[in-house]
Length: 137
Image (tube, rainbow, N blue to C red; front, side, top):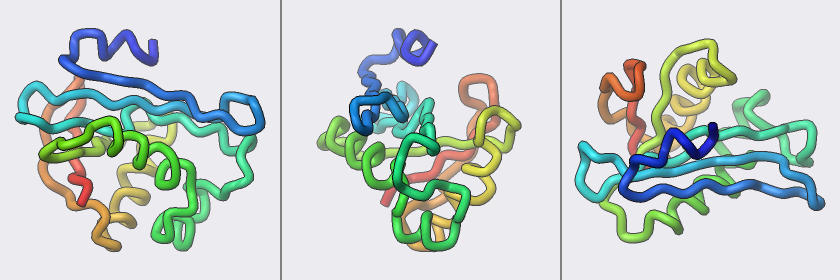
């Protein structure tokens, strides 16, 4: 299920984050057919916070804005490296109850926007939801 939804994309990849030999998270990235040389990063992000020594999205002040979380320290850099020479990279969110999506949409991405790391770029009906596209700066 993690990767099947990306099979029709021109380019995609998925990674598993390990800590002490145990899978502790995952992330995927893929091309965006409607934007030339642009990629969606941090898709299907999952972090099993109880398996990692880092604080996570639950304490948002220092944790988000100082990049003290697995997404900022491992997933985003991996996605950037994979999408080498991309024109633009986007994280998408929507305010649903699925997973921690609401928290990412309402708190995490706006906190990163305040630091200048992200810019709220546009909204689009994408993959069955009106999603906000946050451009990585």
